[in-house]
Length: 175
Image (cartoon, rainbow, N blue to C red; front, side, top):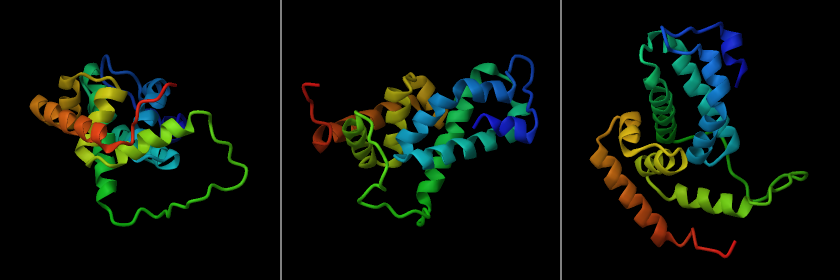
């Protein structure tokens, strides 16, 4: 992902806005984590981050407020994700069995449980949960990122948390 700016050329922001390459280098891990939580798949998460960053790169020179960068990029990512979810064909077919040679990380069970629980939520609720609780954005920041009201963030959060609690997919454990 770091090569995007170098391959495409430098995208300089306006005064106070960091160059695109610096932003990508600093924020890629956090963006990938959010994308992974949204998509539930490592490869689709990489595709989502790269697609969203490509869209942002094209308009980077128009950003004037350094404080708006994170919200702009995350909104682009969430919008791209919801657009992808509207498509009927994703081009991949999941399989029951992992290929030979793949080693599961120790916390794979927890990851699967979280992804399974998130997958039960509607797009909007899932986006709110990822931004609020995994990316640790405030209600106001989440609302600005998604282009919705703070009240909608609160109601979506409440519905999502209620659904997650009653789903039985995230049972408390001693670990």
